[in-house]
Image (cartoon, rainbow, N blue to C red):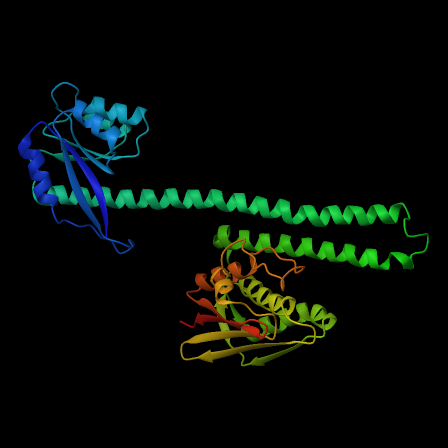
Length: 372
């Protein structure tokens, strides 16, 4: 339960006490809300008194009478607008012209409550204002998270690309100045390291592009009847050269299951899971991929014999731009986005991802997708 503060500003004691009595114990809930809302009502008898209370402890909701002794409600509303106070305002008045209503709306009033009002009318207005408050709060949170994500995006991009670019520039300068001699053979190691840096940058850029697609481009998705085993085998073929280099055996088992999805989503999912299983494996290790139907869900299982993770590391695993950093992961390139992307894709189809892992023994990632 969350309690919202309501300040009722009216020169009639009966109105103020009536609002307090009607809203005592009243709660608001909607299917899309996590918690119900309760209300704490405070009172002010004039506009001047209300402004003092607004400065000391701003309420979430203000019930403001237009006709007040001294400063009227419209003047209070104008001051609230000028000071950019984040308050949901409803005007309570026994008479109001169309001109006043338009001006009040322009200055930020959300609703009008006629006097005299019934308990049902007051509760209905409070319910509407509370829903608007909740939606406004969610919108603000999404905007703040968007700014945070953009900052993280640029930070990761600049940091992760700066180092390989500097190294690549150094390697090219060595070759240009023939620092190791005139023969081509002596530069093989330098060229190999340069290609590794290029591959790391390509991987980062692809992760960022996948991340952007999942967050921003859902309107462009194209649902098709996709063979999950074919997706798994295609991803296996893509990662096989790296697996051969590290002497890692990959097996793929399961049954042919067709699933309605955007093929690019499934490609991203399988490629990330298999890429991690190979990158974080040990030399001579194994990776097992399987696709099975279980009751009304499909289970995609990727199991490796790699370095594994602790419980604390697992708890951070699916956060955006978070990489597990320890002595075992040092030197393994990555953006910290791959598993976050996999988790988001699974969520888009009503599924989820779970992991079991033991340090030094390996990890098992399971993506569950509902068939309905």
